[in-house]
Length: 115
Image (cartoon, rainbow, N blue to C red; front, side, top):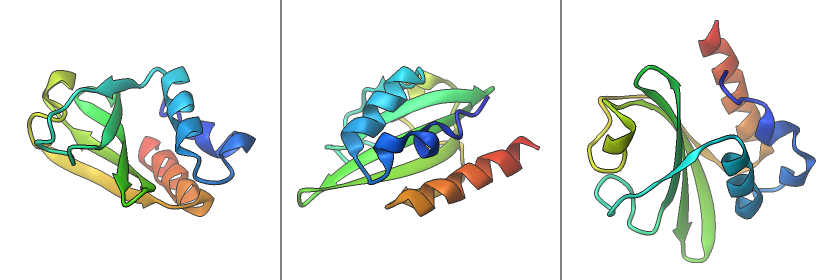
């Protein structure tokens, strides 16, 4: 239900290869969020997927000074169309992912919240 193991179990994502992460997100039916820099940085690339009613898993790829950072969020929105245009009703979880260890922490959280 939560697509929790796909990034960790993929051997091609041993480092923080953002291009591979984007390909994986697309293959897991995440949708790219069109935004105008209101709720996310203007140059951020955002992918989202509804995981429960009005609860979305977001991956935000930030580009700062030539370095790509990935942030994972679980947040509540009224609907998909509000993502990027309105602040979330609630941010349930947020994690900056810098390496595989961070991905494991995120997977652990997803498994715990599923119970």
